Length: 157
Image (cartoon, rainbow, N blue to C red):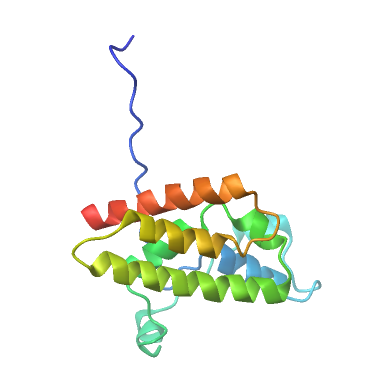
């Protein structure tokens, strides 16, 4: 028995390490492989994902390297979107991915400011999620608010 309503604890977000692929990147890599070279479901579970060495990541141009904050923002943005992302055509996927990276960079710039406007972050995420074909308006509203709150929690840390 509890005296009042129970409060949910905010989920601890995991900051990805450099060289670790996101869910979307793994899925795209598997889809691009010819059918004969695609691993079976059992092989996918047992195969380890290669991690880039520090020398390999140091060789990347500065424009391709992402800050930990930017990686974290991108991970938050891509959560729960894989089923909808799979339904997009190749051209729509590319557009969605490019726009997502642009949105993440805009949000990162907003977070670096002294005062962050929640509505501005929600607006950016909502505009990006509208690129998903077949996404319900209510889903877009709900996801944009949830993602914005989780991103703004990064600012408080």
